[in-house]
Length: 598
Figure 1: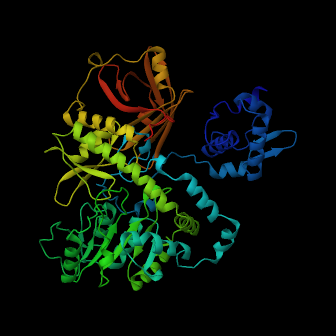
Figure 2: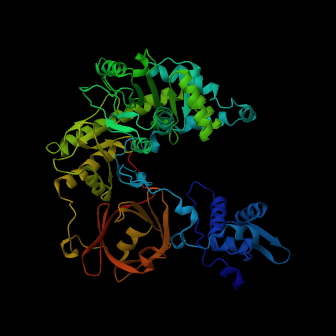
Figure 3: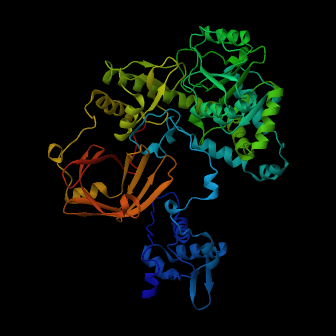
């Protein structure tokens, strides 16, 4: 019996009855992870189902079903009169034994191009864990029409539909989705298009890249409306295009034969002379326009002008727009509308790149739009976003009236908030993230630096407190400074310290500016994820000794133990080292913490 208990001594098998996954699936997932990570080694014997069930507090049937599934998949093997063991071949083939950082330079790595400097804003992977995520386009789960999407996905995955998948339209898009886009989505922007004049793309950025690759060659004049998509601009520079910025007032003529690219950040009120002026400027320069358009998400008193494509008589405008992200599950696909000859070339390029939108996704969107869910969800989400935007406007006026000015466009779900004179917007946004406020720094076409503050990802009840926290930073109340523990609030001690840390998440930025999330688990283990894609991970453990919180990682911080006195001020956590000086700050959150509803 002792050998059975030792076989999983180093494996954390804490299951969560409140988690969305069943206990059986949780156990299965943890065992597979342990096999792949090398915690469970090839030919290692596992405990009997009865012993493991008693140890982790689940029914024996749960463990038996888990073992059966892993035996069927080849992760485990059963040996008569001996028990169940880790499969020697599958495990040996999948366990990585080298650390990523210790990998020597390879011939493949030597052939990679230099990493491009990324000066654009990047949203943290765990943005939704921040107390005040004012990132436009990141969508609060409360806005997602879950019931409607479940119906659309169920219909798209029905037996009848599955049988049609191998009889698709080749390079073409789903005819059902094409008709729904033509009949119900494009008319909202005043566009009438034939079935051969539109193409579905994975995203707006994907559609932009397709259009740019077809139109731009070395030396092609490309005029970007600011703020431009940073990735598209980088790709155009790599193609050695002649990049310039669009004058918002159109005081100078466009370069002959230019490709003008809209920013996708602004709409125009109905009756505005700007659309006609831009079309006239295009014609005078024999230029073309990639109209990067975003459908309005917030109803307002002003009517939005139709898309420029609706006025195009010369075939100069390529219209690109995504389906609304506020009612999508994940990043929504985009539609590209242009003359049929251009669409045919874009279709060939999409096929060559292997980037056709999957058939299941297309048919799901066809059902979602066709059954009226899309338009109804837009109306519901629009009402809630209008309330949130009003709450943001009122909070900005109350707390930052003398410091900033705000600007917006018809139908937008965000405000562009000017920063005080002499302030660097990117630096301000970085410090704001450190206190739990996520905002996007931008530079507009007229050179102004702004913070774009959106309401698609934050509940109305959190908006006022988020703006108040930001105002404290703008006023200098939270400016970074050397601080000693004797000048701060009393540190956490005893049970209060353990209660505050157990099960908490810490959010902060590394010294090189990337976001980092720490999970302070109740069982004394740590899990850390750093980087915008969560590419840098480590594990460790924590403990409390003499009213100080200690941590030790396997690889991070050289694997050395360190202890801190912790001060908790609301959700702001401050860590003080042995010398009593401020060592670091973080935002403390708890998973599953109920969020206020609108």
